[in-house]
Length: 254
Image 1 (cartoon, rainbow, N blue to C red):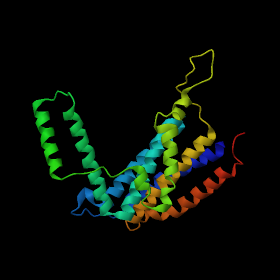
Image 2: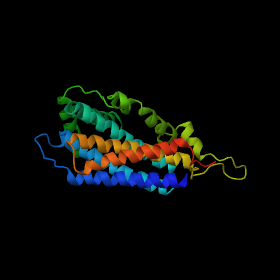
Image 3: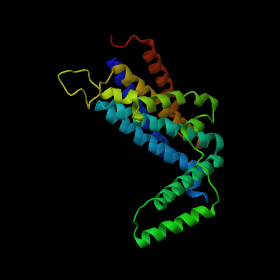
């Protein structure tokens, strides 16, 4: 299993290199849409993905499996949002904007409905922001990972992976909390360093590769293709090869 894990890690690092190549060779013009341009937003998603990818690999190197899986979940979310931009373009950008406005409005309402003591200038600034938000009319929070993953049928199935990472790592579920329980009658019964199983490391790296590679493909498509994106075919072939080795089981530990 160790050679397989090292190959997965090297492959994920290569995906990061391909993302850098896409950045370096992208010909992006600033339009009147500014930050709301799907092309611009796709590049911010790619940047976030590279950052997440590096963080997940660092955490795996430090044997922090829970935290690595939580960050991998973020990369899956990046993939869903990238697919939203690929499929729906400006319409999805508007949904992102509406979702942001809804979140800000909810935060403001929570502040003013509580017993928070605000500085006079701060309160006035917040009230002004709330009035500006209310001028936009009613906004409903419309985006969530499950709904966005369903924009394309072939990506909808990957939500199972997202839900798995949420349940066993990202959320304090019974399953996730059970990682920290140790059957040791002589000790405290808890361990802040959960057991790291090689097969779970390989699985995490596979999810990380799948989602990061998907973001690269989607962003490259939005950009209309880039010289750096020409590496994607080789990265995809390597992912398939490693996935087959992972499923083959011949490299699993007994």
